[in-house]
Amino acid sequence: MPELITSATQIPVPGGKVIDEYVGRVNSGESAVSIARMLAPGGWTEPFQTPEFDEFTIVLRGTVRVEHDGGHFDVEAGQAVVTRAGERIRYTTPTAEGAEYVAVCLPAFGPDLARRDTA
Image 1 (cartoon, one colour):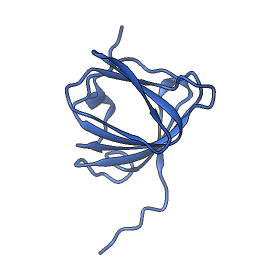
Image 2 (cartoon, rainbow, N blue to C red):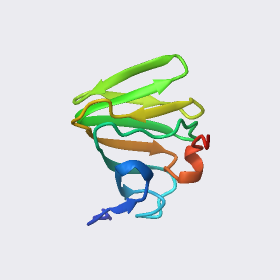
Image 3 (cartoon, helix red, strand yellow):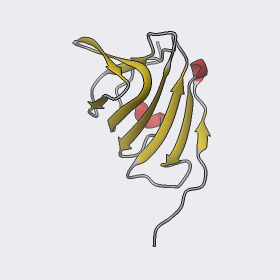
Image 4 (cartoon, rainbow, N blue to C red):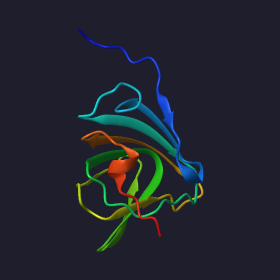
């Protein structure tokens, strides 16, 4: 039977970014996949991370910069990016507009699985 998810759970993160998890470990108890809507203000940045999950991201509004060991590229509204488990990456929003995007993680996102740099 289909399951209606009527609301998201906000996942706390530093730097002013909002993560609304609809499907995942926190909101629905799902460990195989997570689906979340992100709102990141202009100039937002986070530490580098080496996640233990693949992440599929679609940018709905604005620009998300993806930094990786080989350089960086910008993902604009209407574009998508795939990052693989074990890749060292960092997401930022380089423009004043910020960004709105949807991320799907396999397996589901968890702060411990993001493996964020601490330095």
